[in-house]
Image (tube, rainbow, N blue to C red; front, side):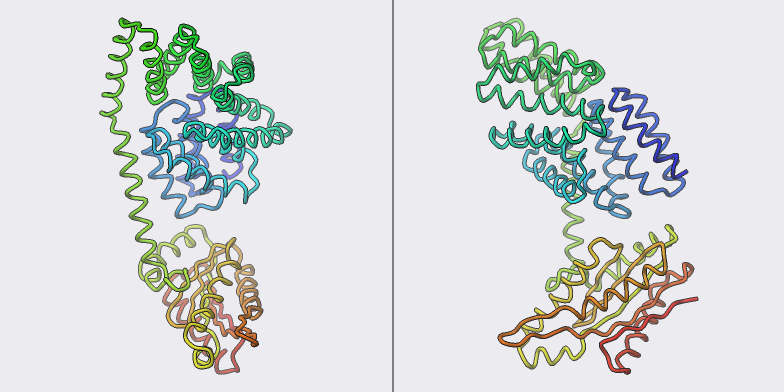
Length: 474
């Protein structure tokens, strides 16, 4: 099943690249049902991502919104860097559709951060191409040009291994760059890019990209004051966008078409386009897309505040509320995935002496040093760090191999003993005692794991401190 779903995801991507959008959607829907039923959560997230992009290509933002609710929930429970990279991309597309420019750029830049970290060339192309378009919309032509040229550079690298995807990306990048050159008055370069796009052998398989190219011609002729030619191409792009139901794009082009018609003083056509524009606006208001997206944003901000309440303000790691409200869900994920769980309890040896010798602010710095060290060391792991109280911390780890959990606990302790904090002419090295318990893939009761780990901690303290002890359930 794992291999089949991997092949399915690849096939859907290939179908999208060839413009077989409806067929790709059918496959994605079928694959998603199979992936959910078989708890293949990596593939569940990939297929949600595919479905959302397909609905974007179909000009169906309402379906995007309904899917994002479910997609976000899976990302939060099972997602990794790649999934959040994809999530921020689709959020940027949705915010753009309703005109939230600042949020659109924010989401795009977050996706770029993840893409850089993962060295995901495909996403770097798409995100920088999107950023080019967004900067054009904001009137930042220099930034737009830079983003477009970066996208082109990455796409040249992508073309070595994925020529078909790169060919489609070329069209998207050139559409965006054409707008930049037109705004800068370089009509020759802008037209050359648009000519290349409409002469591409794949453009007719991709309605959204073809609409953008036709729109580009309308924009080109408008800026050259060739207004009748501009009207022709704007109408062509509107007709194509309407053919597949892309209301957002249609409305944008209608607005520009009206400006040109007013300049021409074509009153009869003005009335006709105005009527269509009003009807479309009323339909889009009835769909209430803006309200849906605002509700989505409200829920995101609400969850952010709730998460903030789970964080310790001094160290930035989770506080005890995480253990009260979140730990059981975290353990359920581990149990469903048949992972081993390790719970480690640790504290700083003779922590009171730091406060007595250097003051409580120094003691706070020691706690921050420990928390930051744990966070950096465990950044790539499926682990949570909790400040239990005072100088006592808890680490919850999950992994498919017990030996990995064992070695990770040992490595954590060894790493913590290397941390030092300077105070005037003195350098203090942390001494940490740690006790841990690893489950047997049967017991996922946090209280039992914590109790055994706590006993191990006290054994270490009674035996001289600055060491660790691990208990394994069997």
